[in-house]
Image (cartoon, rainbow, N blue to C red; front, side, top):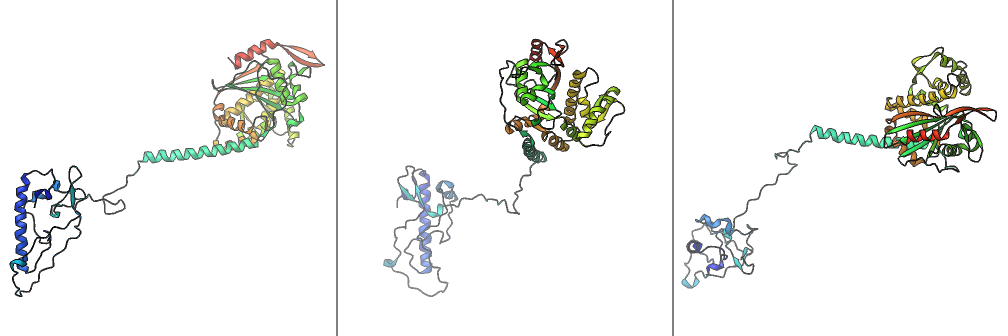
Length: 460
């Protein structure tokens, strides 16, 4: 028997002498076992069957254990247990003595360094490799304990979910409000060549009238240009005086408030662009009586009203009571005061008041005051009740904006309401003179001065 039959090339030579001693002991124990039993064990008997323990423990080191050890030898035969009876048996003769048989091939093969030659390794050198126990996370007896998320992480997780839900609800509500608005197609425009414009500034003309519907084409008592500058976070409110004597495209000359009668909001936009060289992008038409619903939804606004103004508010309020079918004398004021809380009916009468003070000049100023007060109250109002305000506002609006444009504008509304607001009037003092045309009192304006003022205030 060659030593190389049992070892790889990488085992050192010192272990060969020790292995000869082990082989001798093995053969001696095998002969002794066969003599005790009287049976002929001509086939190979494994050392484990003889319960033989290797005295040289170092032969069991890991260097003799190939990967995937502790396999059961296939084809090996377990010897029959010896009989415990002491029956005399005939001693085998010399010819009947055990003859060595070639060892059976096993699956326990070790590959050499070159992976070419395979050499059998005795199975007694295999040692089962210890496997690290795997703990089952579901085992209640294991020491596994799931990691708990910190309260801070849970807080921010739920905060994020709540913010997302609120954002979705807000978007749904804004889309609903956009659906309340009466949107119309752009009418025919005859003049759109104004030189003053900026893509970052949106000019929206707010048109107010005593008429209940845009189809009535009444005279417009309020014409206010809202210039929204998203770069400077600024809103410029410019009131155009209704009695200015201007050129109306294809309709000669007349008062500015008569342009709506001749051709609707589109003709009014063309008239402003032609005479003042400022581009008007869109318009919003709103009747005066929508102010009643808006102010009432806010719970009223605070105004400084003089005793003279309180008395002058009675005639327009009497007309409003008749139209809104209120009792005669409803909401009349007996005196003025500082920071007086007024309802929608009273606020509208204050905005329409014309014959106190400097006539139409102070009237436009009062209208700007009412709009500013509504804006301020909306910013500090209970968000839950903003639904009533939005419903009252959008249900009274007619515009040539598309649904998508309205939706985008609504998304910016909270930021726009926080913009700084500046108020102006065209013409300013020193830019006009009183005139008389077609039997009517008019304002004859200096158009060049007005254009320069608009350029400085809106586009500076």
